[in-house]
Length: 64
Image 1 (tube, rainbow, N blue to C red):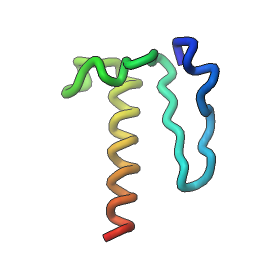
Image 2 (cartoon, one colour):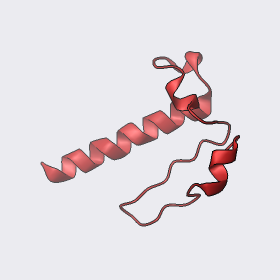
Image 3 (cartoon, rainbow, N blue to C red):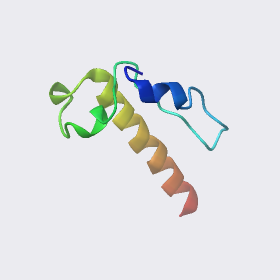
Image 4 (tube, one colour):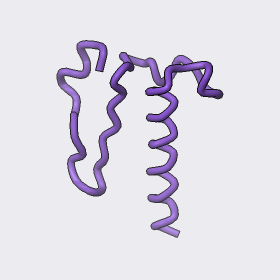
């Protein structure tokens, strides 16, 4: 939410199946800067990545 791109983004889930993950202290591509431990990135980015993995895992369980 720390850059101009956030102005045109979605702020809330669009439905129960179309979820939005906002990173309060993130900026354009901050999610791609680091991979690995929480200490290597901001807590917001680490949490957003964990949330995305959880959502994808649930979707995959639903189709099996």
